[in-house]
Length: 153
Image: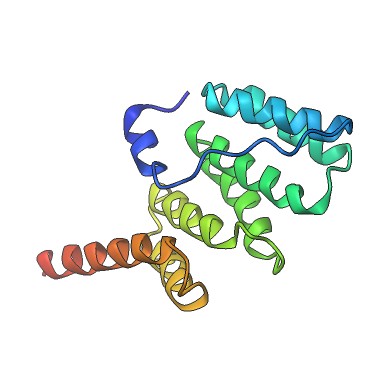
């Protein structure tokens, strides 16, 4: 389970939404995974999201599954696995989670000690998603990084 500091790092994220009611087993699994995530049962949520993916959840929710697996892995401090899932979302041009995945990628990279790469993720949000509400978060992260770099000189 994540601690309060981890929760603060992801406070800007919206909680995953359950899909519209359907009889499809993959969507039922997705809804269960959302519930597990909301209860901070990250390991269980990962299993359910991954099972939903393997059962052929429709494409519009597949990227959401990958994104939330990445977020769960972040809370579980499995940063390489988080990065792998988030990069899949970033590479999907049709994903509505790309900006969120870039922001989480930056946070994962920071935890891995790769602030230089984290800044690249934040810059991509500003450049590629100028209308996203996450652009302001990315700009704040970039400006705080610049200020920290200036203070260290």
